[in-house]
Amino acid sequence: MLSSLMPQRKEFYVLLATLADRVVAGANATLRLMNGLGSNTEDLPTLVAEVSLLEQAGDKIKAEVITLLHRPFTTPINRDQIHSLVIELDGVLNALEDVARAVSMYNIKESTAEARELASLGADACMRLNRAVAGIAEKGRRPEVIGFCKEIEEIEAKADAVQRKAVTKLFDGSGTAWNAVKMSRFYALQEVVLDTCEEAAKTIEEILIENS
Image 1 (cartoon, rainbow, N blue to C red):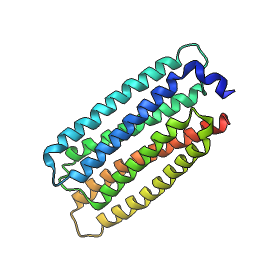
Image 2: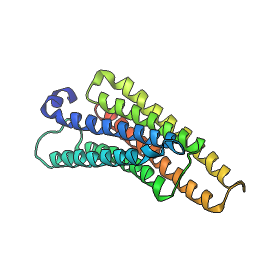
Image 3: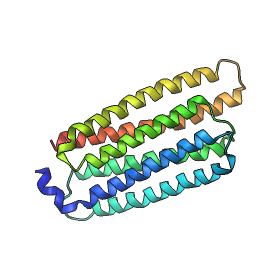
């Protein structure tokens, strides 16, 4: 049944894949931002602006998808699931922008090993999310897509452990209370990126189950 519906509105898959591309680009820019803190300071405003532009592009794609959803025609997959997935993909971009903006808002001058690891994990999760989205339209890629979703869940669990370790380290008495508070909040923003990736992965799994 799914294969008979797919040719009618393939633009949904194209738009979702395009949005997922923006997510990967935003995650990579955020990773470069984290890795550049304390060294390539002249590039930091450019990277923050890049993430913001990608988030704005994501908003436009989200709006286009939602506009299409309000039109009376058969969609390739459940309308609610399309809506959920586009909102979650856009949510990843929003979370990445929050991280990028927090660098200046919290006056973070130096990166930490934990911040870099969380950014790297975020980029890994976004890359797998992108590949999972790209495979939704092809039933033959179902096992591959499920594998990507499981990997995202594993990455998110690893990020949880990194965040807990990082916050524990902040409150060991070796730094100032202000630094502990601001960095714990910053790590929480980074964790939102992973959490939202996991939410999107679960929606993809639901799509696969319903259309298997």
